[in-house]
Amino acid sequence: VTGVQTCALPIFRIGAKLHLISVSFALPVIVLLVLLVKQSNATIDFAELELAGTQLHRPLQSLLDLIPKHQLAAVRASTDASAAATLPDLQSQIDRAFADAAPIYASVAETLGFNAQTLAKKQRDAASLEKLKQQWDALKSSIGSLPATDRQTKHADLIANVRAAITHLSETSNLLLDPDLDSYSLMDAVTVALPQTADRLAVVIGRSEEHTSELQSPCNLVCRLLLEKKK
Image 1 (cartoon, one colour):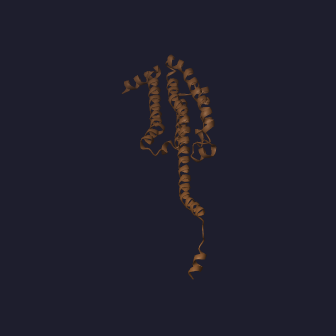
Image 2 (cartoon, one colour):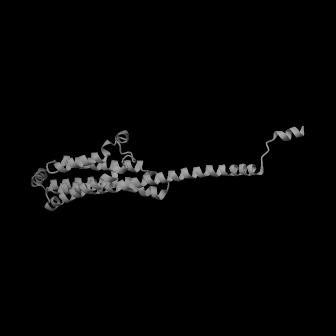
């Protein structure tokens, strides 16, 4: 019986046994290597999205800085000749910011979800660079003939859409998903808090300038004096 049991067992040579031992040790090493490569690729893809987001963020941030300045100069232009003289220069700077954004946008738009389907899904149809440029061109061409209320509204809409574009890229580029707390806080300030603060300051300054110009109008001044006299 013992002889039969011994013959039933597989008999390997020394070389084959060493080969099997090597394979058994290599398998977990290979599995770990594959997992390491996958994790490294995921980290690289995450970083590439962040780089794409920061590249597009720069010209959009320039627009967010220049458009309120243009709005303020347009408000002051009716009563201040020096403010009116700055309008062409500001318009040129805004045109240049759009021109700088165009090649970057073309290279990263699909990666960052700036397509019609994704923008429509998030209700940000007006946040594409093409729509922003169309909106700016329409505002620039009619700036001299717009009533104060319409001018304020069109500037506010354009600023809101630029902010929507910044918010969109911050979400799709993982800038707001950074696992490091310090980096997350910085990106949250740059892409959310600071644009919101700049927008609010532009609204406050624009409204205060409009009210100031109204109060300085001779007709309004006479009306105020008559009302005060009746009181």
